[in-house]
Structure formats: structure tokens, C-alpha cells
Image 1 (cartoon, one colour):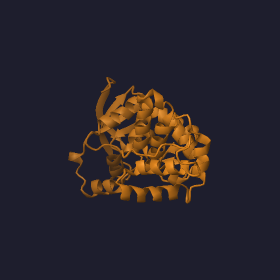
Image 2: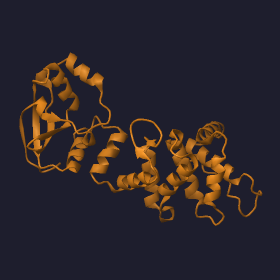
Image 3: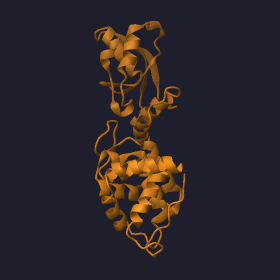
Image 4: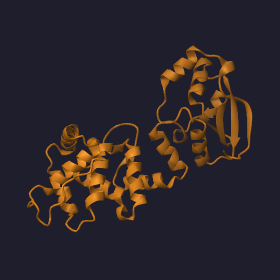
Length: 272
């Protein structure tokens, strides 16, 4: 916990603001409604606040309580606050996570917080995906990624094994060149499947990345078709879905090559 000084005092709800960068992405209206419906000021926990300057006090923990009191008092109420001074934004983000051990933010929220705390793994992931036009975002859509746990798993393999340096970058490169920023291209199963295929094959002499990209571009149904076929294979062969993706990618790569020829890649055999 930070050594920054603090004091406990009453603060007007009008003097408090919310900074999305050090808060949850998803505001829960039902939680606010429940506080309003069952409002008991004597049992409200203290709200944690960061005083950034004379004009700005940011709620670190207590967003829903702040909103409930604001509504109940028509913007005239106060909250009992623990007001910190001298926090950096990284310390604010870390404090938010420390204060919510039993009510953890979502993986997306933690991803954003860890950027602010300078987490090396997350910073490396964020840099890579942005290079290819992607971003982590809570709303599904083209160029938006929500599969942050999958991205981190790929990056961990990337960092752990020297032979797999730039694995995440190569995965994002291939996926983007094949399917652009289609929503289906940014799913956890597809990204982990492509990364598993690359980790296994990209150091082989016969591997040709350009061929991989061209063969996947011609895959029936594009990313959606690949995912659907892999789901069928996973059910029939008891493969983990990502490994079924790798299996289908291997078959697509080898399509048209002479069986047993020098350019053919090994049949996919990994199940996990």
C-alpha cells in the first residue's frame, strides 16, 4: 500500500469525479438501484478518493455509492471519504485493485489497470496489438479484443521460450493479414490455435508464412468457417478447441502439397 498521506473527511458529491482509466469499464445500474432502495447512510463504507490537485478529486473505490448518494440527494449530499494526496495514476490503479480483493474487476478492467501500473507483460501485449490496428475494448466489434487472458497466455510462452520470441506478434500479423480486423478473428480460440500452430512449425525449414496466409485466405467461410470446423473436430476428437484450430490450420497449410513431400508440415498431434 502507498505511503501517501491521507485524511478522512466529508466531501460533497459535486466535488468528486470519475476517471474511467482507474475505474471499472462496466458501471452496474442495478447495484446503484439496490443501494438507493435499501439506503442506510450509517452502513456505507468509506469512499476512497485521490486528490490530484486543488480542483480534482477522483473516486478510486466507491463509484456506485457516489452515484447512489448523488441521486438520492439531488447532488447536494456528502460522502465520508478517505482522501489521499500525492498518488500517481499507477498508484491509483493499484489501490483500486488492492481494495477489491473479494470483488475483483473483470479481466478487461485488470488489463487496463496493469497498463497504468507498468506491468511489462501487459505493456508488451498492448504495444503489439496496437501495431496491427487492434485494441482491447469492452464492446465487441471489428478491431476490438476482449480475450485478454488468451493474449497473456501467448505472451507468457513468448517470454518463457527463446525459440518463441515474437510469437504474439507473428500470431497477430498472420490473423490480421488473413482476416483483417473481423470480429471472429479476435476470438481467444482462434488466436490461441494460430499461435500454437506457429509455435510448433514456424522454425521448421519447410515452413512458409506467405503460404500459410494465402491458404487461410482461401479457407471456406473465412474465420467463422474455420472456427465452426474446429468446433466439430473438437467434439469428435476430444481436442481442446484451440488445438482443433491448429489441426485445421495444419490441414489447410498442407492442402495441395505432396503427401510426405519435403514441403509438407507434420500432422497435428497435440491435444492441449
